[in-house]
Length: 457
Image (cartoon, rainbow, N blue to C red; front, side, top):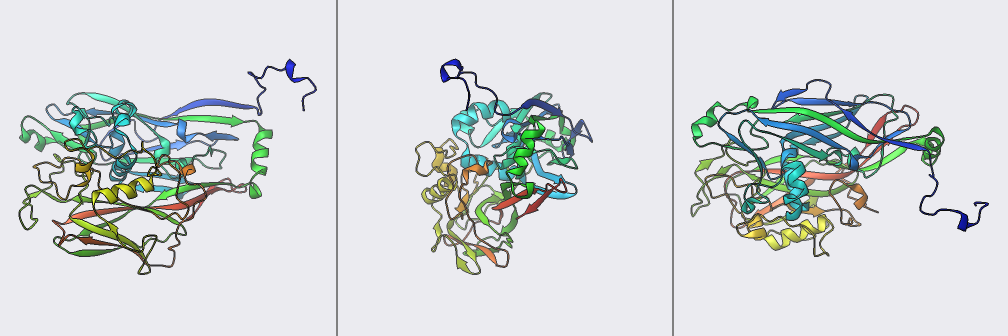
């Protein structure tokens, strides 16, 4: 208690509760400064005593240049972050986080979380989520014309499970944090076009040049006394981060089946959610037997951000052969699929929760998309199969912020069989690729004795 009466104190300028210094650190890749597509950029986040990083205020900055002389590159619906195929985070040789097929995952999460206003506003400026035509909002991203370049930024809380926990991340470790971004090939994150299609034949990974990578970190360094109090507040001095890990299971759904079971093989102590999409492997006019005659052309098609319904009538998650959470199948019509998406993002009870608008028919056309009947894959991406398995459903919030998951408990699958059962309306269409992204409760602990991070999942 202060010895001075309150009237002597200026409440607008209180004394600092702790001695700390904030600063911004800019780091560049160790291995390469400028490279074509299909390259891995390595960052090494150095150790600093009593220092923490705020992932929600830190970002990756990079530049993409289209080096082609006659072909334009249009980003997918997730914008520039969709060019990353994998993102890894390691510490002392241990893998803390591994995001696979990140371009598809990011397109899916944008479809579930991003409003049209955001895609046309901040998302457009920072990540290139807005296309040239409003009718393509939610289907395509920004165009990078030939011989032009553009800078992008994306918060790192989107990039690893440790960074998505909503907490300040300690850098007081014995070894560096190793963050690696692997860029997909030149067709992975978007589609190409030209006035003469024969120009596309000359494209390769060198058509896209990546440079000016910087990891911009918002850091806070505590004084030694405050840092000691912080460690003392945790059991044995170990700081525990509760995160949402992201896995990936890929499978193929055969042509013309009435039903299909996919074995997921999920071994988690606490499985929190499942999200899945179906990527078309065929396109073109659909005949009476649901046949399509055209194959996917990766150079010209938005093949990683076009999600089809594939005549799905219902689906269910099975644990040891028994349905979990939903005792009957989730229906496959757009209304119910959208409802479960909103429940998964904590927006079902609100009037402002985002549902993607793939214009030309609006949100409904984004989900009522059995097959891509055009000559090019459009990028329609609304049809996401979502099931929130948390017993205490999460609050509304961003997908990369685990703080929205308060008092949550998932389903144990360590010694169990896990399947997703799909049933189709009469039969499915052409063969499609099923991408399933399980989300699980992941504990990452900073061991006070070894000064290293270890993972429990």
